[in-house]
Image (cartoon, rainbow, N blue to C red; front, side, top):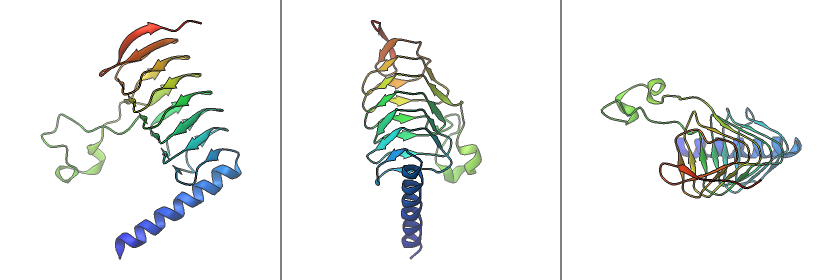
Length: 169
């Protein structure tokens, strides 16, 4: 019975966010969850995206099936399906990463917000770790894991992501 109540509460929160953001001019699909504490400006959120409290997303950016937390995303950004940005990370210094071994506040270590510039493209299933800065007009290849800052106008890919080439202007 407890799970039923929790599921019902989550569905109400999803519908509430859907109505709130669409009323404010942000296009949100009914299968996405967007926190009302996030800060979105005339962007589009499609698929089963999760946009949590700490997210800021600029005008005319769009996301599909993305998960965004602890991040600021600029304007005119294209974020492909399966992208994960700024997720909480486990403390690998502990012997076990299971939350039953220590309290939830020490479970996650924040390494800072992700800062994503304007006019960037994040390829499908790329992962952007906390604390990373991605410059304007950068491209991240599909499946890349970005662990370091990416300068303006560069294309990065791989695991971990590395510089591939500079974009032509």
